[in-house]
Length: 192
Image 1 (cartoon, rainbow, N blue to C red):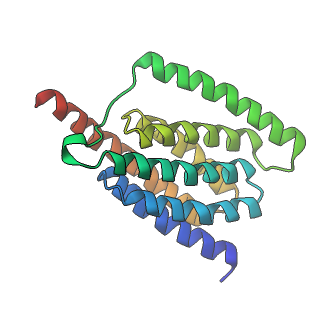
Image 2 (tube, helix red, strand yellow):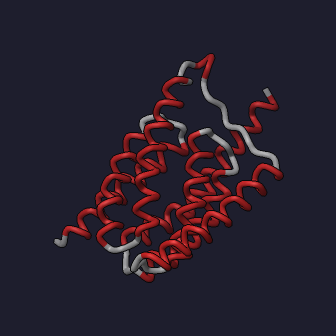
């Protein structure tokens, strides 16, 4: 079996485990996210999806941040709660994300041999945003992921990343599941 395929399969297994545990709000999820991201960095660099490689470096960093944040707030009396952003906060994040995505896409189109520089940059920049919101347990992170996963399917399909494509299909479904579950948790705070 080719090295790229092995890296892809292992990263997908770790990524799926991460997502399932994240939805369940289990802090161990961050270990799987970090491991899968480290494998992905090497793969994406090898196949010239540079924005994706940078994104996975960020995933490693946000993985350690999420682990620290969720561990710090793990006692029942101090457990981190699901929150939500206002519409204006989300619109500001979208505006900043679009600006950064065009800038990054231009840089990679102009100065590298990157494939799909603008789509790659768009999905990467918005994944930065969604991952940060995820670590902070902000409900709207799942809405960002729903859109990002849909666009990422095109990117992975065009690069024949079949395992990542399959994982992203699963991520798309679980993004809806995560949104519903976290919204239910958020709503339970107001009922209690």
